[in-house]
Image 1 (tube, rainbow, N blue to C red):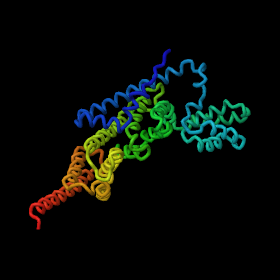
Image 2 (spheres, one colour; image 1 turned 90 degrees about the vertical axis):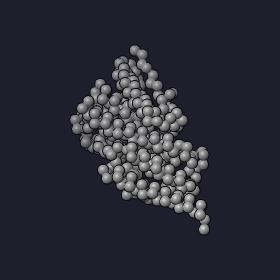
Image 3 (cartoon, rainbow, N blue to C red; image 1 turned 30 degrees about the horizontal axis):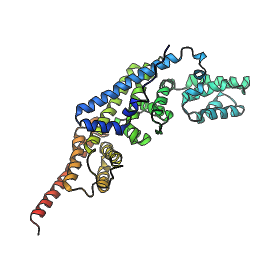
Image 4 (cartoon, one colour; image 1 turned 90 degrees about the horizontal axis):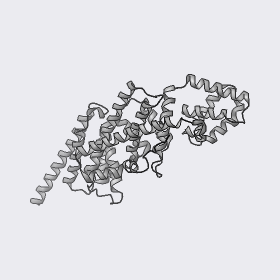
Length: 370
């Protein structure tokens, strides 16, 4: 049976490059239809990737005993330095009194229970263990299967291959498969607003990889549900998909800000590094207004000092107006508190009025100098 190769390394690599794809959209159009089309494209890619990877996973089980690489349980482990850690477990096995002590020690080396399961299975293949020691390991496996978090173990198994694929797309990318899998498991567990999720992804993986993480989560969700043994079920997929859709809405607003400011001149930036750094500062400022409006005044003042100090007053007013427009288009559910929407608009409107008064005074002074 022929196994299809996944189209991850070619065209998708460009799609997952936030800066390239955002720039391409800004060159084409800043219309909402372009943004919707872009989001729809990402969603379709996630569906196709999930189907391909799920199919690949089922196909690879056929004839598994004839494939030495598939028999190697270590390849299914995403924990770094798995071989060395398994070797440590084998060397320490004589010190363990029972299966509980084995599990307690092994969890320190393999925090993820799916990785731990594979590590214990790999230990059973070692010729360095006596029959009595292998019995202890088997008892540890029984306990792990009986008392472990079965849903988390299954989800870890279902998305491990996808995490590996996404971590290999770009050689310069520092994101590991383990990091991506942990991100997905947190997404399943944490019932927090999409804005916090988005901010968490940026803090953990970096501004330039926020879209890659978003697409990975969507792909993993679909693959996890469609797996032969699902980690999440259909009734759970709806709320999780809705939460992810909220993130996509935030991503669209993020993209709008990027497009608005793409050709906007900020005094303290050079042409070489202007786009990336400015985009990141603008997004951080925008998110501050969504989740911590009490810090917005200080954050905006810092932004003004860093990037707007040499701007004419009318251009400073334009910056504030752009933020007001995007905040007005932001749904209430993306704000951490229902009152933050009004508070953010009030602060920016007051700031805009102040800039307009300053601009009028400058015009009067230029016309009627003393």
